[in-house]
Length: 197
Image 1: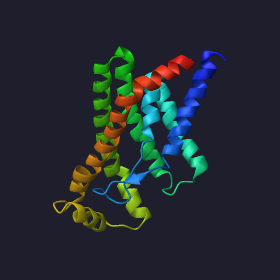
Image 2: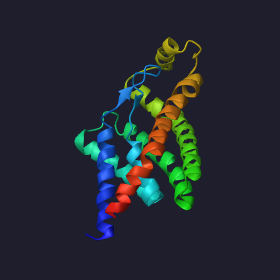
Image 3: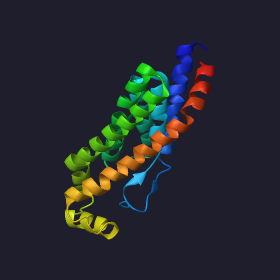
Image 4: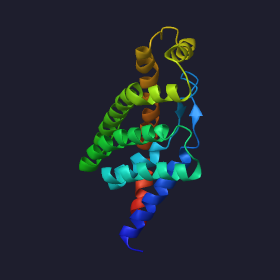
């Protein structure tokens, strides 16, 4: 088997793992019940570090398609689009920085920048179209969302504070956790992949 076929097989495997990880979501007690945490960005960022930023985008797209093949959308594709945007905003800057220099310091810088870009970007997307769409789809008002957040954090009393003090921290935790796991295990995974290639 030549290297190109091996690479395609590994990208397919990473994509499948990402699609499966989307099902293994869980709730963090300090955030809204419909804001689910998952680790599906792990294979995206690891694939980006090994192969480069374009391949991380391919993995991100394929993981969504695999998830949709296994389970239809419950959000008229808005949840999947948001997940894809977040994956790309996270993996693209991180893998661009790492692939150019390939050292521990650049990996840390890339991961930190990826976390910030993805967290801020997804928070803006939530303001513009994700939350408004969900609220319209499920007939939920601003008052209900603010009330849900207010039960967790009493100082949240407006939608702006929902985004700033709930959505943004959630995404910082989500992408931050993926970054920590990537930093801890990337070298071992990459050595195995390079051995296969």
